[in-house]
Amino acid sequence: MGLLLGVLLGLAIGGLCRWLDIPSPAPPTPIGALLVVAMTAGYLAAAQLM
Image 1 (tube, rainbow, N blue to C red):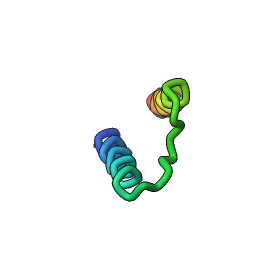
Image 2 (cartoon, rainbow, N blue to C red):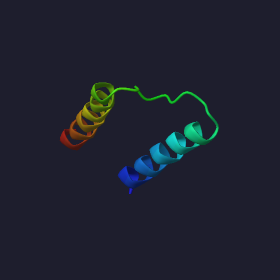
Image 3 (cartoon, rainbow, N blue to C red):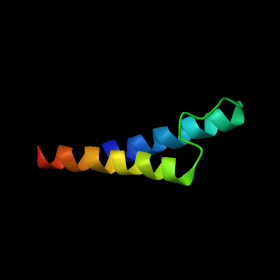
Image 4 (cartoon, one colour):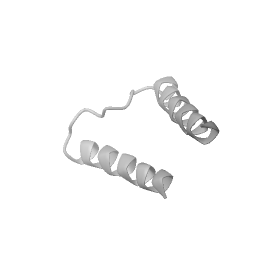
């Protein structure tokens, strides 16, 4: 449930940033976006191990 809420919140923030022409808090390059995905995956994996 928490993962679904996180994805929905991320989509909502991204959509609002685009709609309101506010600079997105995410990196503008594919490599930067993959870094964010990798950090999120690491966070979730560590939470599962703990």
